[in-house]
Image (tube, rainbow, N blue to C red; front, side, top):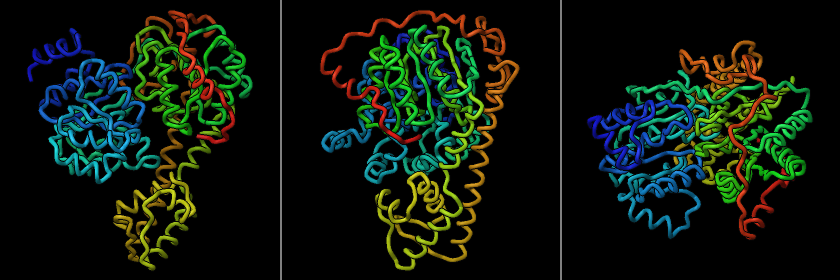
Length: 516
């Protein structure tokens, strides 16, 4: 594919006269059938890197995406831009709708799907019958950040790619330093991936760390800041319970603002509803956990505030990158109290099973194997049988399947191999715990940085950076009290009464005691 043709096609399909940095280079490699790892900053048009090739390639493009809300939003945007043969396969579909998609599966140019659903036999067997030209892993850092514990199906994508006939692979991310790049390439088993890595620093975002004494002072800060600045704002929390409580308090104190909470414990439809209203400026402050924001293409978010200390720099960069997608000056604020590291330490420890839990699971599995019993197919039944949380079971089960102890819910017992795998899982637990603790230490180092916050934040991602023409950070020349957003939040649009009733049911009900 010649450069001239790509320039012609981007103008024909999108009305653009030029590419953003990295887009054309990634597309050229894809169209030459090269596997690609692309790292571009948030808001730089990563999705175009596969959307345009999908139009030009003869077969279907599969896009593995982490969130249903993200898939639905991307399909909606593509259809609005005239690309009709796109679909998101997800759990929201009823039986008849899904059967209709299966019937015409080979006619779609882009199919969005989760890493879990694509590995279901009924789905994978159908996909194997159609021509797959391109296999995309969107938000590919999830392979490294989520795959080892939370969503191990990300680590099984190499098997899926092989089953689909080894199509060209594109892995895209906005936060992948060298260690995560290696993890992505190793997990996908694509050692010859061509890297297109670009600086991810967004010069229009100014950084501010605000030292506070305790959480009550954080709430006072939020109230004062949000009363002064009527701008679309995200406030990130590590606890669902605190997220809801603070949202309720802000709603009471900020009578002229629309405040909502959003976290993974909510119903899917409720989350989609909140997201859509935020996109349309019918809600202007979202108190959320890291469940919110991935792929959100809202241009005018002016402030991203972290109420709790993030456990890793990669997540922090992802979240602040949601501010200022329109290029206008925007703000990242981290509220930090002396004991804030205790919560992420507890979360890190709770994400992994203890050695004692692993021992108990192995003992119970051995009994089931000797009795020739199969494991239940439902995770909830396994949790109840083994007395273990789902996240811990996923971690253990991934290594059991990888080492051929569990196959199709059958437990295969062989004493020597059994002991070796047990020791391997215990070692992997220690390894993952060390990695996560080191990520937290890096975050703490950044919080206590005395030199430029921007330079320190991005040093693991790019060799150089340009000093922004406007304000940089609170360690350089920036004073938060002097900040003026480029424009005030436009008036919240009046919505019909049914929607108001829906919002009343969703906004600010602080009764859930769960934590993230």
